Image (cartoon, rainbow, N blue to C red; front, side, top):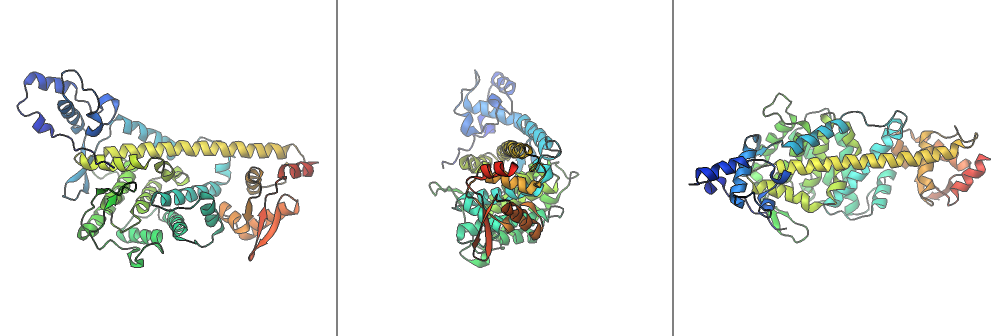
Length: 447
């Protein structure tokens, strides 16, 4: 990836400039040229306002931004503070996220996510575990990885181990969402995320001991970032934890969503571990939002969105680093990512509601079947009707719905007894399969 050009120094640009030209510059001092938070890399490709050069146009943008720019208690490699602003696009995104991720989801009582939230939570944890690991090189199919996590089987290779660890770490963080974060907890999180996946097993759960670590573009292996020296990492991690745990009385006030994003940013910037930095960063992002009451974030995957545009993700880092530590570029990118993840979750829920309603309508047509099945069995039937040949294990059904093993076993055995599932032994356990003619069998059972 090509490193973005650093912007021209506005003070040098304006040295000795005429008063008339200076007045024109101030007339165009908007933080959002062309309505967007543009980096110099993008602005120089656009046509400047009449009477301005690209350099003087950029100076007017800097003046417009400096009025609302605030310093953070987070430092770069030279000890200079990172900065942020909240231009109108950020405020709009924050408004929608506050409404959609911290309030009540816009679905009536009795819909699937309210009736059986554990199933949807597990689906989300699986999705984030898989895609977050795939962002860092894990290569396995979603179907195989999901089967491993639902069944609770041990991983068979390095990629599966990354995904398995990520799932365990996300579950672990759910138990910590009311706790303050500490360097020790971050090291424990990294240990969980990387266990059995590192070249040197001792690197799991410890800060890197070398400066021979850099961030590269995976497409061409070009170095795009050299993180701070390893000797600085303990102090930097302490500073980051203090920032993560700060409340709304701390100055400057940082909105909880922005605080979570900045945690993500700083782990990526500091790169405190030899590997697993991205997974650690995204996991801490989820912890921070959960701690601040954004409950819906537990049900969605940002990595699923990031995986679709990794170059934009990296560029958001580089824009910050090349423009005087302005993290607003990264904040805006991540706010957009969160909103897209919320939209994707709502679309997923709407699809699941439609599918389940179709199954319920099919069952309600018969007095015999109308009240025969519980919500767990209806969910399984809904999946089985569109997945002939799919296998269902008792332990996976148990994990999906967070019920006792015997309850899950009874669900499947009852459906097998009705002829709606076929049964076969695999090793020490039975697996129940969806027959290809399941719809016809339901029709016969309804008569």
